[in-house]
Length: 502
Picture 1: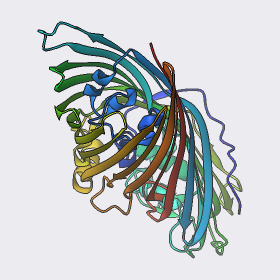
Picture 2: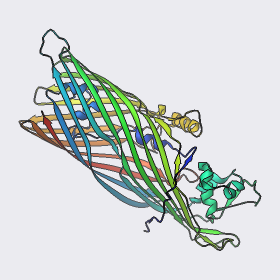
Picture 3: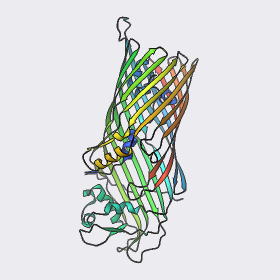
């Protein structure tokens, strides 16, 4: 099987362009929750909404920091493995990606008032940083498509654009749809029906015999980090309240390439395209803000009830995109057998994404000092996800699409911990519904986890293993060709945490 090797020479010049192409996937990669954080938190699948006492539990319920009995700090190191199995028209491929990352670091400071007449005897201040999402991932799909060519992507964009736009204008002056058409016209993927400047109709130079061998290679990296400032307090040691202010950092790099070849008969006249390679380097960076409110109530010492609210995250992002196309062109009028069109990096105007809010209800049963059982149920309405400015294209149609096709999703987390002297044994389960009404495009997630901990003096070490899997569809391109590879994605994570009371 032939894999794709890049020969894209990225330009250094950056131009500001009005609008780029955005998709639902761009929003969901920031809106869908991932369990990260400390080893204890991961070992119990994040079921900490009514438990607290862990720095990562602040993500689920900010009231949890007041359950620390001493000043406390932790740092976590994780090994991430992503395994993608792809099936594209019966051809199966597998790709693995491995990453080692310091994914959590934080501390909490506890203050107590021993005055028995004071109902507010305890409060805590905490700061915690986590990589809420590690985007390192590699995906490779290959197979023979009996129906559609990737050339339809460029042809689709071209229809309706006057020919003089593709011949008389500089690439950097064009809108995104015009740029995509330009790349196809410049490499003979399609031709104009007439040579008049106002021609808006085009035909493909790719033979229609089917049996297009296609490859799709995607390599992404980067992270979505979150810095949390937390305050929590206790009232009569029965009611515990907390608030988070969260500051998000986004830095994502995505390189993706589509390749196609065909052995169909040549056209007698004009050009025949036998091979296409389409390369893209997309960098997304920016920041965001969100907040959390939470409460935990303990009617008796062994039972805790939790309720928390997570606001939308308001992201402000900027995209930089570098693109290039190269083809093998037979018999074209310029006698150029290997035309290519590689363009300078384009920086687009900033845009905003608003993710959904989330409500979580929690219940925990505490077995004294022996252990605990915990359950969290969360609801998030993905149909409220929005691109902004929402009154401008392409965001109007994109937001309408998300309102129609995304849905309210329920997430369930279950966790348990049992202590044997200095050792702790933990396990967890997680189920997260698809954000889609019809989950074929992006399926439900199921996860299992387990771990151990050991306490010595003022120190503790924890180790966790988590396994998650989800099925989804991956199209080669966003338009013109909607045939999708079926992806089975499995995440395996090992996390080590060192903690200290001080």
